[in-house]
Length: 185
Image 1 (tube, helix red, strand yellow):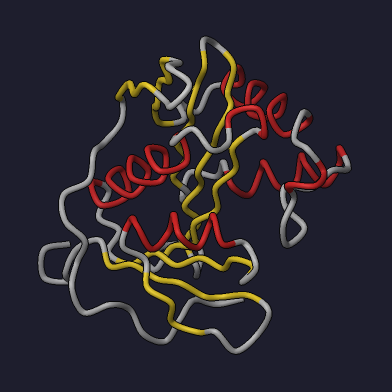
Image 2 (cartoon, rainbow, N blue to C red; image 1 turned 90 degrees about the horizontal axis):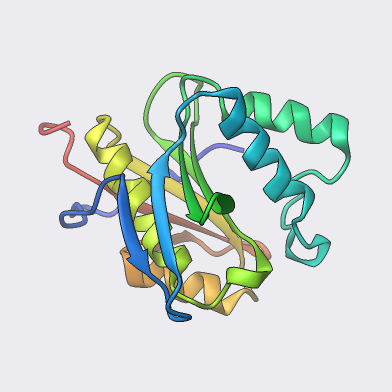
């Protein structure tokens, strides 16, 4: 799948960058930081996805079969991608990946996952904002995503952050955001 033909004209405002710490709605201290490229970070992310509730999987991701999960981790943890983790203590409980559409540069596709035990507490908002800030810092100008149109909570979250619907023709909505204008990035 490729990204949208059009993106919002205006860039979103300033966004936070990792590392940072936020307090979620359950008063848990959540650390948000960039993936460090280590095997221990990869293992912690794999553990999160192995614990991921099958009901929360969308569009076939994260894959549930171990071999497919390994292939997917290889793809999203590639050096051309940008990854940000949310941690509760030492446990990865949330992850955003920004994957380049054509393998090398903007636009990037965004995917977010938060463990069910930590959903609805504001972690997704903080995680996406931080990942977008990190992406902007890396020179990314445009980001897009798809979301199932019935997933009102996710659609509302994306709109709150500044994503706009660019295609509503199928059962999925395509949404996009501009992080910075081309001349500044």
